[in-house]
Image (spheres, rainbow, N blue to C red):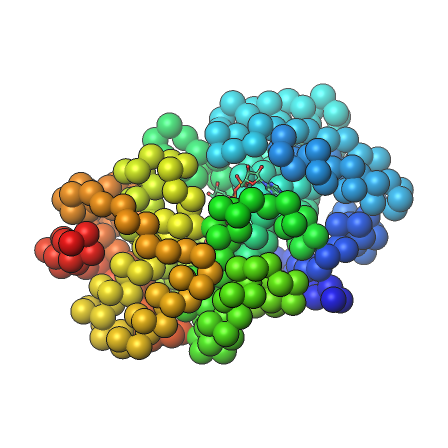
Length: 367
Ligand code: NAD
Ligand code: GLY
């Protein structure tokens, strides 16, 4: 299948391409030669993790070398713990040891963890060097590599230190997805489903039709799902880059309960995507009561998530404990829990829901 390209155009930012296809990592060097602020980079430092580097670092370096780039690499431990002050400090020091200058560039080769960490390092080292995102998980391809959020975690919570800094280019090589574990695959599928419900009929009903194909990693379905998700996210970010206009928050659909489950069950017990899917199932039922979401949508979304390999978790906790965890989220305002609630496919609102209504719905959900 030929590669596809989506152009991300955000007001007051340099537009950038997202290339999606099986061979695009092999073509990374050529792609960078076409980007004015990266084409003459004196050095390109690839940041990757201990799982991804043995699989794809050599291919990325060879492609860059073929185009005449001098390359170096920094490999961080795989997993969420790498998004820490300590590892960020090590990356900064390594960049300085490599004498990376402002006319250099960084490539983030990995999942959302590497993307967020390397993106933050690039945004801050020497007050900013260009960053190329080369996502290798489905989640990173459909969500985190696009839109410019970079972050590390603090003791006080996830993603509490970061920037909004758009990448110079995104290279989404679908060939790298062949080695992605099943749990991570389903995790990315949850973000595709989220995007489809929020986006509208065309994406949603297409996804319902191909859910099994996507779950089986059919190449055509995968490239189309990534492309549609990127087009959707690019539109959202163009409308509200800094999450200040009440638009970008739609990307939190399913995340209010999802984050609470991740926290209460213990990070890593369930994948982020599995928790988001559970949160979507809960939110659509809340939306039935609060904003009149139709029964057919509840059933269609359930079927979609089942088809994508995201069954109900069967996880339970005391409703009061869950509400309290929801209130601990950094996105809570004035102690009120807010939900992205779709009244139909492509129609959503950000609603403060009264504690009593949330508790009643949680009781029903856990019954
Ligand atoms: P991840 O980066 O931890 O990757 C998941 C696992 O898969 C890791 O063990 C990784 O080493 C491994 N892996 C990655 N690619 C692989 C491949 N091709 N083959 C085999 N193994 C591979 O997790 P993720 O789900 O990609 O990203 C989660 C992170 O993304 C979180 O920190 C979250 O906060 C962040 N995020 C950021 C944004 C944003 O807008 N910046 C949006 C959503 C999520
Ligand atoms: N939470 C995903 C984003 O805003 O980009």
